Image (cartoon, rainbow, N blue to C red):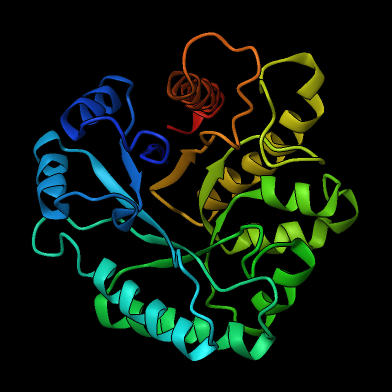
Length: 279
């Protein structure tokens, strides 16, 4: 099984695309993770550049300006997913879409309606759509996601456990069945080290965050194991340390973009070495 690492465009939006993609390629990433509606650019031109470089891509998405009514949200959500699922369709489509769906206060019926839209768009387009676990979305915590997965077993996840650690102020030691359930539905990982008081540690390699690092590694090890057991030929990971305010700049040298790039490269290199035996 081959592990493919995707580089987030998030935080690098100010870097011209040709420069960014060259850096991504030189750093050994398989491709990029990108929110096309998050910046003003010619989407098809970017996709053409990705194809030219042989870089794969996946989409991450959310509705930025949440409409005041649920009906308004559903309409915007449906329309955006359809647009994204058709991007690059002719010759260089994304591998999948990770969606930050709904809000944490949505009722179960509203969550079900959102999942139904994802299923419909996925079925019609052939594009896999995963639910990203994320604070302030329906998928904000382990105890909320588990019953939904039990009720809607076709639901697949992009798992970012840093959010759940932060929300529950724990490393979920007492919610292991919910974590295991989530991992069985996981098809993509966002690899950021969070902790019990926040979604991103200051410096993942420093000794004071060893407990946080190991808590994440144990979960990712299980993800890799489960994908391998399922017979997957490859699995995907996006190192996803974010820019400020996720990144606390404090007394760092360099600039925020360089620091974010360094942290994600550190994460990729660590996991690449860790899972080399799975190649």
